[in-house]
Image (tube, rainbow, N blue to C red; front, side, top):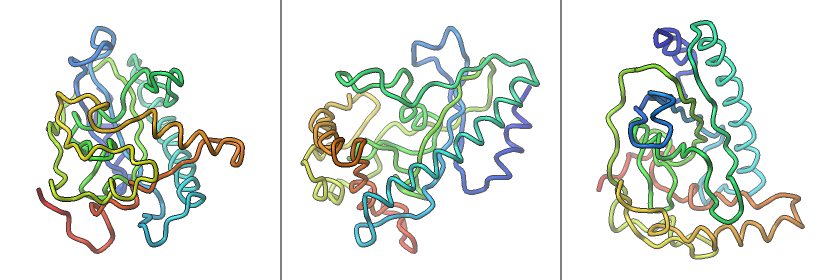
Length: 225
């Protein structure tokens, strides 16, 4: 079993959060037993006071580079053990549904890494939402994390909602049963971000709702609902 070597690898990256979840909830359950999910923190934990889109985009790229390094190392372990696996793509399938083939966020919640916030991103106790996720589907069984099944954001907290420049967030607390459309107007968010393609050569990263979240802010105790 590759579990021991995977855990040893993550012990070399103490700032990275990780966990395992079974895949009985999704369409890949007949091909893979488990998903390994991990969250790399952005190097600079941005707040509304120091936020710039350029720095946020740089944080995304830096975290992505670290993710790629760790994924490659895990692939080596799995190949050594001749364990079947698949690394799902990050990219969304199309601009209509705006959904990826495999939801890293759902897997992260089920692995116990964090919960969906009112901004529809994963909130962790340690870093708040200031992390980048990755996942590897593995045809092996592992000890699974205790899943989050409901939002832990306080009902009266509206920091991410108030700062959203296109007012796409609906001030709804997530549960496993809720669809993302109940939490965020993804099309409105996507239209706003896409409007910057001509100027930036890419969609705007727009991480204001992440920067505003009180969870994980340096020197601040986590909020409790």
